[in-house]
Amino acid sequence: GQNIDQPTEMTATEGAIVQINCTYQTSGFNGLFWYQQHAGEAPTFLSYNVLDGLEEKGRFSSFLSRSKGYSYLLLKELQMKDSASYLCAVIDSNYQLIWGAGTKLIIKP
Amino acid sequence: DVKVTQSSRYLVKRTGEKVFLECVQDMDHENMFWYRQDPGLGLRLIYFSYDVKMKEKGDIPEGYSVSREKKERFSLILESASTNQTSMYLCASSPRTGDVDTQYFGPGTRLTVL
Image (cartoon, rainbow over all chains, first blue to last red; front, side, top):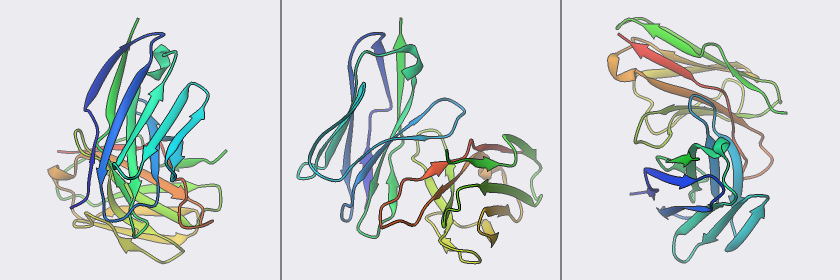
């Protein structure tokens, strides 16, 4: 079967760095998305990786290793507004999106 | 900016009622999707549509139907609501520019079936 694994919840301190991991087992791979979702709001696009390596976008970076079926989202200089759920989603060989359950990130002052 | 709107943020219905959830996007996107989101589970695809009057079943279509009469509007219908359909429903749209397209989400409708 197809599976996306993410930690359910993480806690970090304002100003620190946090890494949210995502591992996947899917039938084929055509890319991986990270979305941010604040409580009660719509998911919003953060990043898309299809090649191995690190993609940096401001305070957020996303890494992909296709051989390991692994990605992470790195958040630097954490701010209180970064408290949200972070969703990992993989595009399979049929170009269907497979979603992880999301990681709830709690930022403490 | 892409805007995807949903007709209600919160909805409370009774078991057996017919429920309509409306979604409208203003960016001329070809693709539209309906998901439900439940605690501890990933987004689960109910139905999607790649064109007007076209629909495809997703992973959990049972108990639902959809309608796409106009390009900008995609409706989700619960023919006879049941308590296990209490959930957050998210609509999304994406352009058909290639095989991989970013999906843009609406704010969601939190449906409670009593």
